[in-house]
Length: 325
Image (cartoon, rainbow, N blue to C red; front, side, top):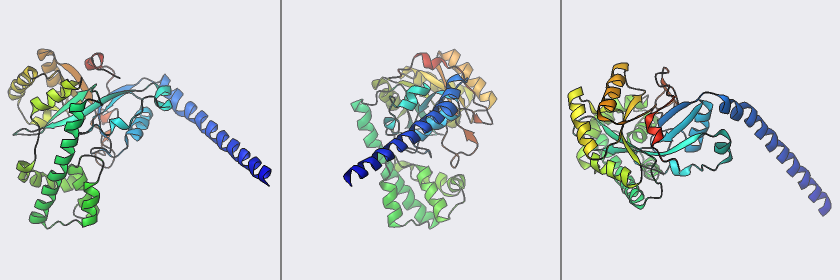
């Protein structure tokens, strides 16, 4: 009887191995080889579900290969938990040859508009960086609870104890997208954008005084001290005219800014030309990316190619300066 069982298990193991081998051959023929032979895009601005994106870091890698992206960065908001999930020795990554850059997108407190600082080539083991990430995650919980309390007061929006518990225990920093998703789930809005327009934009403005944010100089120093390159993300979000933007960038350069995101899905052609001019004038490294979040959150933005193919990057000066280990 024991011999019969052993024979059965051996047959089952052989069948399973045959299935695995067959699947690997299909992956090699249908995915890896076509990818290796194709011309590839660059996308240095993407988000996983460790911040406000939809896909896991591993799913982002798969999608990047599917979309023929040869070099890309995961730049989650105020966290490096997502990029830490990527094993660059994974056979799929090794076989495709896709280059994955350690990245982050830090939020800086400004009086007008939104300022984000991208960091590329950061050391994920840097003690100062990891300590600050833990602090920012705790701050995000307090900020989210303040926003939710204000929404309850202003709009009579209520979430259950279980929903709040799940929100607080998420493995990533909590941001407005998480709260917007809850609003959609509860029927207070039909889409994330609608939730932002109806409730969150106003509520975040009201509760901004409760949030402990970083200055742009702190963001830049944090990136520099972890061996990275600090880059001003999507300058259009600062809501400044050309003269104001140039003055600000010159001050930021004095604090260590090294690059500017020239190419972005939400940049107009005129804005792209302006930021390119500023990059050359100020001797800044040029970066770019789609700011991909996912189909549900940003349905009109595709990984690698942006909005209606307005981001199709083949080369960037910053890539010659980024540490890729």
